Image (cartoon, rainbow, N blue to C red):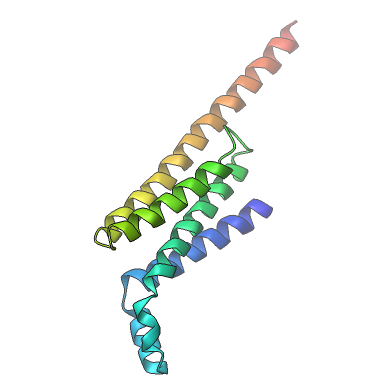
Length: 134
């Protein structure tokens, strides 16, 4: 159950950050409230939050797979920091492309976990059959 809550939190955080990054939702909202001065530094917060939420999704997928494959903790932290640094270094010029690449990386990781989990399940069932035949 813990993995489902982590997954839901990650997907929600990613969705909210993506809506705020790629649509004028916050511009309209903050302008209406009178906090439009905050808009100048908002991207410096929203993109790392979005990448961290995607990292949370990747970790939840790892937990849901039954902890198949190597532990991703350090790798997820490195990728989140690298994507945020790359985005700042490029001055947000390729923000959409980098974000799409991050989504593709999480999707590829989910596919990898599915394959590894299926292989370990199959190997486990083959071992049980061999023991029963002996």
